[in-house]
Image (spheres, rainbow, N blue to C red):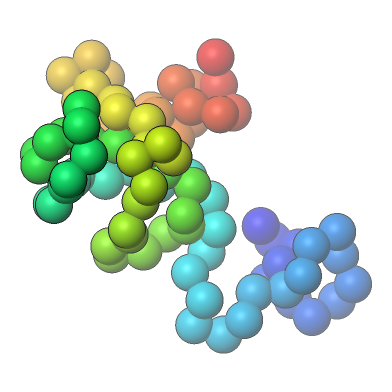
Amino acid sequence: MRGRMSAAKSYAAPYELGEPMQGGAVGEVVASNAEGIAVGDHVLHFLGWREYAAVDAKSAVKVDPDAAPLSTYLGVLGMTGL
């Protein structure tokens, strides 16, 4: 991520001004027409850090806020963890 915050040559293209930061995010579903994903569910997605995201159900991973704090799905219970 740091390598994309500058115009210096890097392994990935730099971010455009105003573009969301790329990375995993956990959010609460506010609208859904997908089978198995209901309003109020929490999901993990990789569309970047933003207030709202329209996520394809196949790309959303349901997470359980009662099993662990939501932030752990971005670390120890997420891609960089177990």
